[in-house]
Image (cartoon, rainbow, N blue to C red; front, side, top):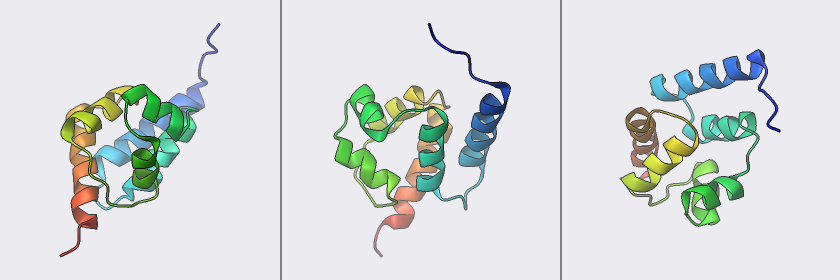
Amino acid sequence: FIPQRSADTATQISEITSQLLTDKAANFADLLSRLLDLRETSAEQLAAQIDVEPGQLSALLSGECVKLDIDVLCRLARALDLSAPEFTAAAVRHLVAMMPG
């Protein structure tokens, strides 16, 4: 048995997803964390699902600059039911902004 999400939860996920993918000034780590909360999954569960080290995903959620390739970002997008090109672009914007110099 898989309980159905309420309409409110689906609306929240849709709004946060839209914000994540369109707001270039949005805090990527906070939005990613909110998506995990809304999807009722942990960073550890998601890391296992997309086959990355939990520390990498935790660092990304902490707002740190981490080295992730495009394939990992696409797997992350698919696991969160997001558009891979748009999500990957948002993640890359965040990661490049965190790079020194």
